[in-house]
Amino acid sequence: AVDLSGLARFSPSTLIASVSPPGHKQYQRIRAVLSSLSPGDVAFAGHALALLSMHRHYKFCHCCGAATELIEAGLKRRCTVSTCAFRIYPRTDPVSITVVSSPDHRRCLLGRNRGFPTG
Image (cartoon, rainbow, N blue to C red):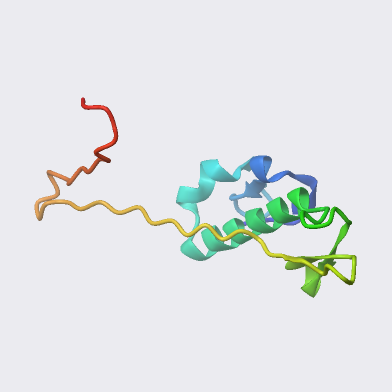
């Protein structure tokens, strides 16, 4: 189980989750426990991190400099100046890591950018 209550007390870089049985809480940094979480909990934690980051970095409109306000239950922010009304959304960073391996799983395909130095 992931206990993300009290997230507002932590910055995205130090988000802490509980991954121990109820009644025996042991808090750890979220990155240290991601591999032990279910895909749904990883998605939930990723969305929480994106929301925390948005609220931390966009307190002011980057178009006109006015303060921003929470809208749609905190899922978005909006500039408070009616003529601007710029909307801010949390970042979404889709990531995919894939290993192409031989049928016997003894070899994998490695690729590199030709712009990298040889070696």
